[in-house]
Length: 222
Image (cartoon, rainbow, N blue to C red):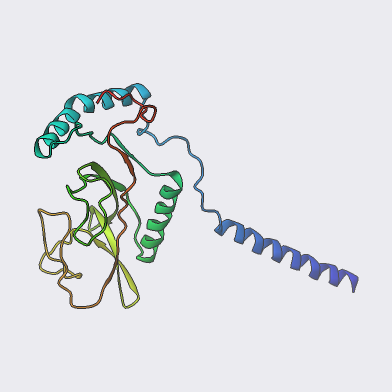
């Protein structure tokens, strides 16, 4: 009798350990450390050279143009960098992976678009422009779509989540009723159904128009 009881207790322990092991495996979200990304890390010296090249070949042109269209007492300060805190980047990656998973697609790359804030204090909808006239960047996740790497957003219709290319292409048979706009970044949608669209585009980090003493890693010779 005692041997049967011990046997049953052993089975229960093994079962509990199996459950615990499975649970631990599914909660691990951090990818394994594999060293620096091969082919993507540059030396400090190369970064300095590239920074100086931009200073010499781009910054003066930007200043000259901006000062010519809207003269101010102080010369226009061209943007030199944009930054996001690490917690925001981690949250953003978790967000786009979650949305992509709901739409059953994989995020291929993160695409960084160079952009410019409008010469205005407000957008047409009334939102404040964070840095009028300044250069900026925004980030777009991409996916594979018919063999092409394209930026995408998420559309939800009647509980179904679909990853939709930002620039919808109409080949005569477009499932999403997209209207082609080859020259623009976005396209319109002619569907009459109520579609909820989730944007995955990251913007409005902290940008530094003129470098403040001590805040610029590569010098203030812009």
